[in-house]
Length: 83
Image (cartoon, rainbow, N blue to C red; front, side, top):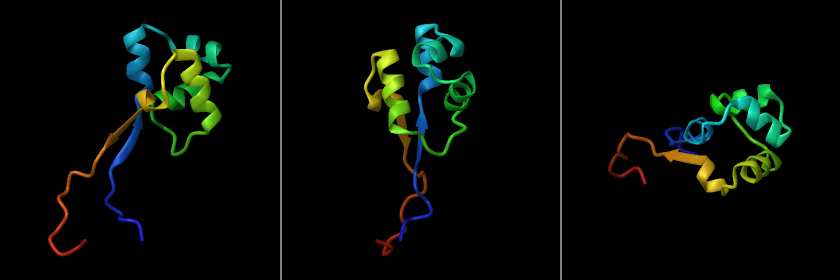
């Protein structure tokens, strides 16, 4: 059974765009993804993302998938004896 208190995975797309001074509409044009999709991705308003979407983003931004994702572990320490 999965632990309900797991960490979170977020997309770093918004910060990547800021670093590169790219607008969402520019990325939409480069990736051929809709502006709504790019907006959802930059706002982390998605629960899942297709592998071909990740590939398009990586191609357009010349990055690796790991550059796109950020993992934050759960901040609560595990209780003794619950392993």
